[in-house]
Structures are given as structure tokens and as C-alpha cells.
Image 1 (cartoon, rainbow, N blue to C red):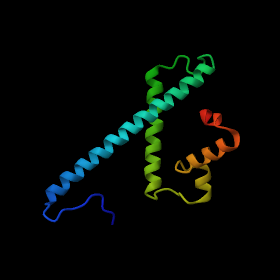
Image 2: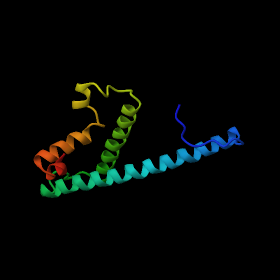
Image 3: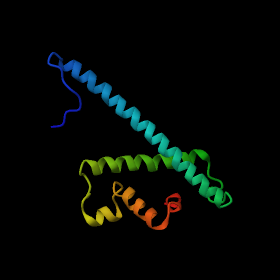
Image 4: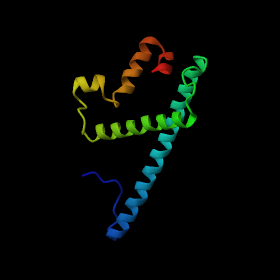
Length: 124
């Protein structure tokens, strides 16, 4: 069993629960910050692509819809990362790893960028 924080000999169960709640809040806050940052990066990338296409790509799409879509994508990625980390999906199966796994995506993108150049990452 993993230990997430040290337990002092005199601590009560209430003390442990309070510390656990504090640690959980810190993890939640950090995850929220990371998701907000990732949404911002995604929206900026989509905006650059739209700009490259003379603003035709997102014509008529409200900013709130773009933000909600980007947030939905990020939350689904968080869910998939979590499920893969807990071995709830087929991570390790060659077919899954190559075509479906999000945790192996970074390595695949890095390999493509090394072969075709960094500018490829702007479009993937």
C-alpha cells in the first residue's frame, strides 16, 4: 500500500482525515490550474489556425462555444489519463497503445516531430 504522507504516532483519525482533505484540495487546485492552462493553450492554437484560414474556420461560432468545447476535450483527456493510470483501459496492448491511448500520444508526437520537424506539432 502506498503512503501519501507520514503519519505521526500521536495522530488521531480526525487529524489524518483533515490532512487528507487538505492534500486532496491541493491536488484538486493544481489539476484545475493545469486544465485551465491547457484549455488556454488549445484555444490559442485553434485561434491561430482560424487566423491562418482568414477567420473562416470559426466563423459564426461564439467564443463561449469554443471555450466549452476546449474544456470538454481537456476534461475527457483527464478522464482518459486517470483511467489509463488505474489500468481500467487496455494500456499495454499494442493496438490500444498505437491508436487509442492518450498516455502514449506524447511519445508518438515527439517521434513525428523529430522526423518531420517541430512545426508539425503546431498542427497535431
